[in-house]
Amino acid sequence: MTPVRVNLALQGGGAHGAFTWGVLDRLLEEERLEIAAISGTSAGALNGAALKSGLVRGGRDGAKAALDALWGSVGQVGDMRMSAWMQPALPFAAALTDAWEAAFKTSPQGIAAQLFSPYAMGGAWKNPLAPVVASFDYDSVCCEEGPRLFVNATNVRDGKLGLFSGPKITPEALMASACLPTAFQAVEAPDPLTGKMEAWWDGGYSGNPALFPLYDKGLPDDLIIVAINPLYRVAIPETPLEIQNRINEISFNAPLMRDLRAIAFVKRLLTTGAIKPGDMKDVALHLIADDALMNTLSASSKLLPTPSVLARLKEAGRVAADAFLAKDGPYIGKCGTVDPAALLD
Image (cartoon, rainbow, N blue to C red; front, side, top):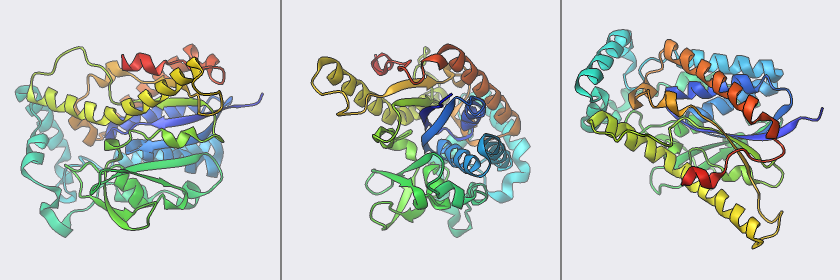
């Protein structure tokens, strides 16, 4: 059987990216699917790098092992808002944070972010993801073999999206894509277009993830978005913590909404005959998400990757992917299973 080629768009979301780990773990078991390209932001970029590197070095089993190794390493990082010397106090700090949020409906780390800067420690500050990204095999991550990989970050000075691919995907590029500015110092890396050294923040501000690289005519029409941030919440946020959580979700979903509007616009043009088939990519859109689960998790938990939470999210991702494959899998390669316009209504 000829495999069906698909593109993957992997959202960022800190420790919640372990949900995507589970999704990918399940998709890799579908031998009829071939991953042609990956666009990832933040945790999605780390997942994409591990996925590609593993596929290149060891096929599907290699990719599963690489993803397991990635999240095993992330689980050892501890609270990414805490300096390395504070990590021994992590279990106590995590329990205290949970108790504080439950009692006062505010995040102590969120309050601290308004009062203290990650630059307060100067040169003593260390990026907690540095050891994680250093472990990748960049010969495999950057090679032409395997799926094409795109990583995006946000230029601090002009707010524009920086798209890293091929040999430009370095440890600095991956750390830049995952650089939440209230917790991390900006990451210095060469601009992928100009080569000029620039400062970068999390790619979620400009593309979460960027979809336009996947519109290349050499890539398939089928695009599977693995979403982490819930698009919809029934309850109106009222407490400081709930308000801050929703602000974060809306901010990081805004770039995806923009890209979905573009896809919906092109589909309208094709339907009305304003443009001819083949002139622009007619994306066959698919979505894997678990908004019900993500509605139960706070924004602060994105920076607290405890192994138990990561394991729970991985299993939830596998369940979501299994449900998607059972319901929508037969349509992959034939038509989209999600109407982008419906997501915008």
